[in-house]
Image (tube, rainbow, N blue to C red):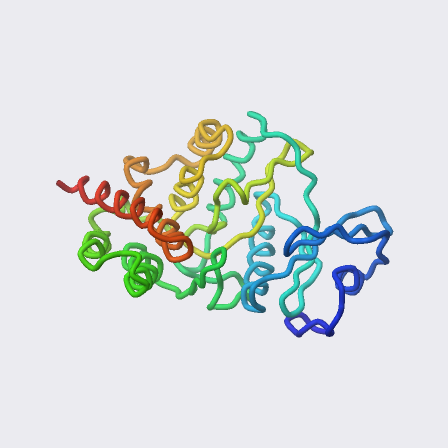
Length: 295
């Protein structure tokens, strides 16, 4: 069976794991929602993950492989996919440490420096119609970050939030104004970075090997400050050490901290679409703060 085809009806996670890894399964799978941990006869444990759609699974698999190719951050190895199921290595988790945080800062800088062909570029073999969490995300290439960010990351989710009644038209005008003024707000131009794309703390795993591993990417070419803004949005252990090590490896442009809210507009609007009004309030606050920087 080739990658991307549907798994046979009634096939359990242990069958998928055996077929895509070429190993025998040892013991019953451990189930947790859409995830199943499956032990293999060589001692390894893999995760069989059920995605929301074949496109989302294809995007995740391509994203993990693209991040791994940079030889910078650690990501689980991809063993294969078919239909809505993906098989990857399990990451044994540990406790956050200052040393791991500093290594992660340097590794994240190296990942971003690996670059991308364009803003919005999908990983090789990744679909244009991808996903960020449970929301659709289109990877459409562009050459100018402010224009691309407005057209393909901010405004599509704002329009949907307005259509859903979560954001009022008068409020939308505030965010639309920020989108129109992005060339003034974006800071110095930078080349496209290779982004994880959904770098909130839940996708940062502190491994038992005292290393940081990244999971569940929404990988694409983008602005490196976007990944860092995501780390700020929901908190990250030892974030100050992560950022200090990042700055040592690849200094950020002046004023980057003032642009955090600007880069958080995208994930906040995604959360508005998925989870409602509370995130709309946060998105509006971020937009007002960004706009006030221009006076």
